[in-house]
Amino acid sequence: MNIVACVKRVPTTDAQAEIAADGTSLKTDGFQYMISFYDEIALEQAVQTKEASGGEVTVLTIGPASGSKEVRECLAKGGDKAIVLADDAWMQRDCRSTAKTLATKLQELGAELVFMGRVATDRDNAAVGPMTATYLGWACVTDVVEMTLEDGGGTAKRETEDGVETVRFSLPAIITCDKGLNEPRYAGLKGIMAAKKKPLEEAGAEDVPNQAVVTGVAPPPERKEGRIVGEGVEAIPALIDALRNEAQVL
Amino acid sequence: MAAYQPLDFFDLEDQYSEEERMVRDSVRSWVGERFMPGIMEHFENATFPMELVPELAELGVFGPTTPEEYGGAGMNNIAYGLICQELERGDSGLRSFVSVQGSLVMYPVFAYGSEEQKKEWLPKLASGEVIGCFGLTEPDFGSNPGGMLTTARRDGDDWILNGRKMWITNGTISQMAIVWARAEEGVMGFIVPCDLPGFSAPEQKHKWSLRASVTSELVMQDVRVPEALRLPKAKGLKAPLGCLTQARYGIAWGGLGAALACFDEGLSYSKERIVFDKPLAGFQLAQKKLADMATRITCGQMLALRLGRLKDEGRATPQQVSMAKRNNVELGLDIARVVRDMLGANGISLEYQVGRHMLNLESVYTYEGTHDIHTLAIGEAVTGIPAYR
Ligand SMILES: Cc1cc2nc3c(=O)[nH]c(=O)nc-3n(C[C@H](O)[C@H](O)[C@H](O)COP(=O)(O)OP(=O)(O)OC[C@H]3O[C@@H](n4cnc5c(N)ncnc54)[C@H](O)[C@@H]3O)c2cc1C
Image 1 (tube, chains in turn cyan, purple):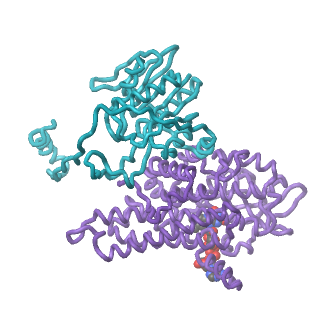
Image 2 (image 1 turned 180 degrees about the vertical axis):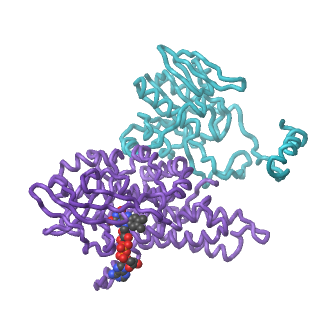
Image 3 (image 1 turned 120 degrees about the horizontal axis):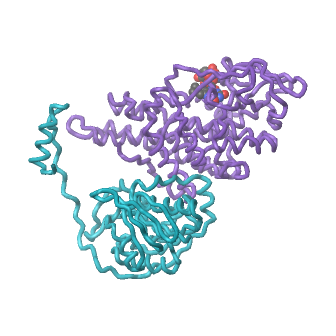
């Protein structure tokens, strides 16, 4: 099967966010990068699918030309080849621009099963998966926590607010992966050595203008200082009272 | 706990290849996610986390420089050093386990073994299917292993081993031991399967250092070892010393790992800890300590990096390895003590890492050549006058 894992290079989650001078983005100096948490799960699912049913895993990313370490890591973890659609402004793309560019490439690659993360941990949109599938006219199942493949399609489980939903889907499809679907592996030394010899192809990313543009970034409101309502079991009524009447979260 | 942020004051990041950084980061994540959550318990209970051995093997950290044909990853020495650094950031016991398996067990089989021995043992050691130990030190001979009393006597096609080894890391949990013994022809090395009659490896208890590492005695009473298990190319004391040079190289990086962990903990603690109405880190006394520690770590990092590159070029000398081991373990121990103090009472709690590192590093200061023995090695290198006796 022709399997593709779409991954995004994002700042590490412990990065200190500071607003840049233009007021519409974050300062990137000093940032360290990683593959977005849920994309790691997508890659793992792609590799496990290949290991179980055969085929080839292509790692596809829109990202900076210099960001090869994170992409190589995906090859060390079992991807067979990687394609970087180079765009130094990859973090500024809106969802549609990303989705359209990915859709074009996925079509060209003849992908049959595509895994993406549920959401990218930098922008938090959770939209690229379904939008890409819409462009392609493919099946899409989001927030998947369990899945199996059968002839010409598969069954996936997704967790919703109301419970677990079981979905049958046809191929080609885009699956967006949630926590719990699998435990991503670490890049082992042998994998790292093997990754050196795997193809990493770089191509220009299709230029799709943004339709949604960020016009301002403000820091989150300061959190009010906490208050200790008491200690031990005796404090529980006071705590419930405060949560219900003061914070109004219960 | 805040995310681990190791110091890189001189921006050494770009001195490492992409592959070297990948290895480091993979081991770093593994240590943080898989090893750190359980280490306090293991340290308190004086147990090694054996349940993680298959994961360590999967990562490929056992003998990573061993060529691929023998089950290794064929990595360079910088990658091996970074692995040791990251493992010892977790615990010296973890790094010791890996140092012994790779540098003290796989290395002698690789360097002094026959082709059959390499094919037989190295893949099993790399995959963690077999755990090994290295028996050189004896109750009466540590710094001066040349005085060893363990003997090997030829008997037909076999050798008969008799003697006692002490302070042997992993002894009790090993399936095979590399044992060094004195024969008429000089010091020889043997691969000794631990289930041979006459061989036993009782654990040494009551350690307050390297508690998450098993340390054992090896007792050999007329252990009959076939000639096929003698390491044919190990001739004389320089053979075990060659293994030690490999392990010490890794320890030079390991000391840095422990130092980086302590510094990271001390820095973040002192920025958060309010004393006399402001963060501890805002006082000159604390800053002097932090500045000194950052400087020593940075010097140690450059020493290790240069040593690794020299080793990859085949140019590193045992004396350079001595200097790096001596310097980087001492700085680790000193930094652990300073940070222990900066954490106040919390510094003596195992809920924090520093106390564990401080206790562990006392062993690391002594094993693989004591600090003073390395002083003498450097002294001899610069003066040309040996002063061991
Ligand atoms: C936790 C742990 C694990 C270990 N694991 C192993 C292992 O796996 N395999 C193994 O073979 N060994 C192992 N060792 C043993 C270790 O290598 C020895 O303890 C070390 O070499 C020191 O030997 P010693 O303890 O006999 O000390 P000694 O040699 O008796 O030294 C005592 C003191 O005398 C000093 N000294 C010695 N000679 C001189 C000199 N000529 N001039 C000036 N000062 C001198 C030393 O520096 C030290 O301060 C381990 C030790 C520990 C603590």
